[in-house]
Length: 608
Image (cartoon, rainbow, N blue to C red; front, side, top):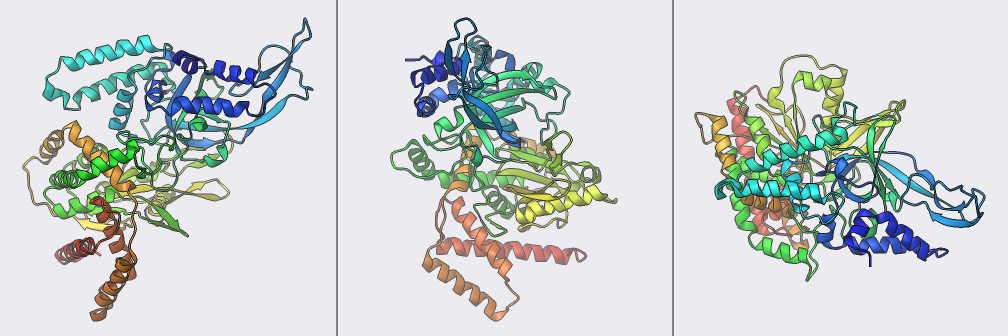
């Protein structure tokens, strides 16, 4: 039986051995997939595989097994390769069948191109980059989960580093261990070590969607089921590592027998998904798949346990957000609903479930919005902050475009993973003229908010790509951009030093508490939801009653928003169906919010 070192350090040896045993048999490829599937279904053995996100490239053994958390930034035309070919010994003229799968080149022996036993196969190549805007806490937890690695390809280096980190942790008081300072420092040190060995140190353009991103850019070669993959899918791929110097960029080639082996590392779909490393994954389920209750499974036990404390976690998170929003409990409630929103379905062109929030009334005299974004970064899995200054709007590259000369899709900042938080800071607006680029960027942001789509520029035409991005707009007055809901901030606190106050609020949250918040947001987003027939009838009757006295008091758009708020409010309490009490609570929230908007309009008559 092959050891750990065999299937991690020499996966091609496993493939060639199975091929040799099944020569002439059509099911040898299935046996390869089954072998690696069995290995990867064990969560512990999955962490033994070194990650390109954490390990410098020079520590990795060529042709060893690796994994990579990434986003499909671009895809190329399918290519043909020799899946099976026959070689001829020049001395003895004996022939031998060879396996060409998961390899870039054939063996040196002369190849009989006229052999009837040769098999030409097809594979698909994707250009993949690290997940844009992935939060530091996601990277840290993923790194910690993979610290125990038996692979001899890089164990000595990792063991030494782990020992140093453990020694550093042991020398700190218990209270300091609960802070993020140590983790942040180690992340910076690890990033510096990685940049010295990985392509990120190259001045060449690796086509990352967001500025300042780091990590390797990789070509992922997929052999089975590649029709189901598409641009912007988020993957965790397992494949065979090959490092080569390509004429245009230095890149990593992943030859890819394992992604479809497991049946669990397929692309994230456009519906509700999660990539929170704190949540367990059910065996055989793709990364990013919806959380479902399967009796007796680890996922079911985890969810049952967490749902029992969900109310208390919600209360604590709401209290935290209230402090962050300067004592405004109503704004905190709507911000919480925004954080668990997601596009769960599409009806024609209408994305259902989105809840773009405009938080107006934000202070402009201090970096309040910057600190607010830093706080949200600690809660969400991925995010990007775009200051809407005139220079940014006229100079930013938001929409990807096709470069036909280089034959690549030039990335844009709106090429974000599913459920990413897009933080638009409108407090940086200034007087000036938008040029053609600025107008296109504003239009693109409006399309994301209203239709959850980005129109990629292919020069002679535009191609529509659906997205699932949570958009939060902070502004002083009503935003120039559309939104699903606007809440005007009414601070109940006036700290003398606002930045110091927010820093203290943020520092008071222990990592264990933050992990509860992160888990809560992911679990609440993934719960199933339905409305019983009798509740639907009651809602319809209620809508008719509200319009009896004043037909202008509530529109179809208001009803739609009220239903969205009701759905999110139910999920925030762990409820998978709408109850009468939750409906009444949602109505009350909306009434208070609208009254506040009206009061603010009266106080500022020139605002629309």
